[in-house]
Length: 404
Length: 228
Image (cartoon, rainbow over the protein chains, first blue to last red):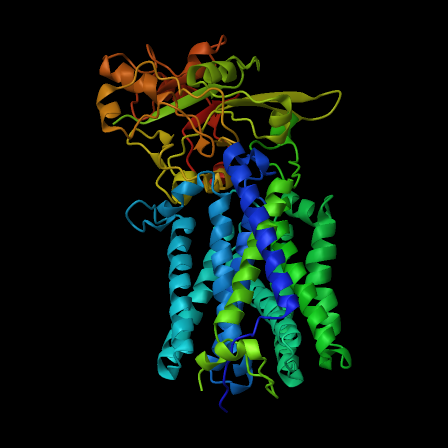
C-alpha cells in the first residue's frame, strides 16, 4: 500500500483562531516563567517537603506522551503494519513536539534555569550516578534521534527509517524507564521507592501516548475535513484497552507491595488520605474505569466519538497519576525518628497549594507543544491526503512539497 | 585524614534551640516568616525536633537536634546531577552554590530533610566567612561569598572553622567546634575525629549506647545520638 502525505492547508478561520489562542497562552506561560524567575520559587507551591510541583508533573507526563507516541509509530516503520501508516508521521512529529515541551518543563522548574546546560555536560561536569544526569543523556539523545527519525521518514528512505525506527523505539523505552527510575530509586521516599516504577512509567507512557495519539488523529482528521478510518481507530482502541489493563495490574501490585510491608503509613495516606479522591476518582476512575467501560462495551467500542471520549479520559487520568505521585506522594512526613510522633511543623503533613504561576506556566508549555504540532501540520507533510482532494487555491503553493 | 563526626547526648538536651540559633547566626542562614516556616520554605541548617511517645499519664518527649548527618554514603551526593554536592576527604558533605542548578533532587533523596532550597532572594546574602582561606578564594570556585535564590544549601559542620583551625594548628573538637556545639549550654554536642580512637567522640561512643537516625537507610550517618 502506498500512502502519500500532504501538509495541512491551514488557511481556515478555525485554524488561525486556534494558532492565535495557543500563542496567547504560550506567551502567558512565558510571562509566568519570568515572574517565577524574578521572584524565585516562592511563586510555586513547592516546599522543602514537596520539592517538586506542577512543572515536574508536566515534564514526566509529556515525556510519557512522547515516548508512547514514538513507540507506536514503530508499528508501521519497524514492524511494517501498513494499516497504521496514515497516522505514523503524525505520531513521530507529535513525539518530538512533546519531548521538547518536557525538556522545557524541566528547565523552568530548575532553581537556576540558566544553568540548564550543566545537565548536558555528560561525564565532564555531571555526576553520572545521578538518574538526572543519566536521563540527560537519554532525553538529549532521544530528541536528536527522533529528529533524525522524522528526517528519514520525510526524506522517504524506508531502509534508513527502519534502522532509525528501531533505535528510536529502543531509546524511547529507555527514556521512560529512566524517568521511572528517577522516582523508583529514591529509598527515602516510601511511596516512590519501588523496582516496578520504571515498568509502571513505561506502561503509563504507552497508555497515555496511545490515548493522546488516538485523540490527535480523530481531532486532526475531523477538523481538516478528512475521513477518520473507523477500523484504524478501533484497532488502536483495542490496543489501548490492553495497555490500561497492564497499567492497572502494575499499579495494584505496587500499592499492594507497599501496603503489605509494615512501613505502610505513607501509602495508606495516599490511598485514604484527604487527597485520595484524586487517586480513586481521577487516576483510577478517569484513567482506567471509564475508558475500560467504554472499550470493553461491544457497542461503544466501534464508535469513533466514544473512542475519542475514552482516550480523552485516559489522557486526563494519566496526568493525575503523575500529579498524585509527585505532589501528594511526597507530602507524608518522613519518619526521622520512630517510634513516636514528631511534633510541630517538622512532622506535619505538608500541604501543597497550587499557585497561579505554575498553573499558567504548565498551560503555556502545553500550548507551545500544541502550537509546534499545529504548525508542523501546516509546514510538514504529515497528514494523509483527503479522499476527494478539492485543493483550495491558497494551498496550491504548499502541496507540491508533498512526496509522490 | 580525619573523619569528622558529631555525638549528641539526648539525655542532656533541654530543647533550648541555642544550637539552631547559633547556626543561623554563624552561617547567616536567612529567617523566614511564620507562614513560610509553616509551609516549610524557610531555610534551616539545623533544627531540633520533638518526638512525643506514650500517652497520659506516662507521656515522654525526646528532643533531637538534627544537623546534617554528613552520611558516609550520602544519597544526596549520589543523586546530584551537577556534582554540586559531594563528600569531602574529611567526610563533610558540602554544597557548591556555583554548580547547583536547583533541581531539588537532593531534597527529594535526603532521608533526614536537612536540605533547604532558597525560595526567594534572601536578605541575608553574605554567607558569613570572616576567615576565608585565601588560596581557595584565588581559585574563585570556593567558598561562595554570597547566596543566591534558586540553589540548595545545607549544614557544613562549620567547615570554615575546621579548616581555619587546622591551619592554625588548633585541636579540632577541643579548641574548635561547630557553632552549634559551641553554643550549647548543656554541652550536649561533642565534635571530633571518628577515626581517632583517642578523640572525645570515640571515647563517648565507646562508653555509651548510641544510635543513629534511620539506620535502615544504610546511609552511615556521622551524627551519633547517645541515649540510655
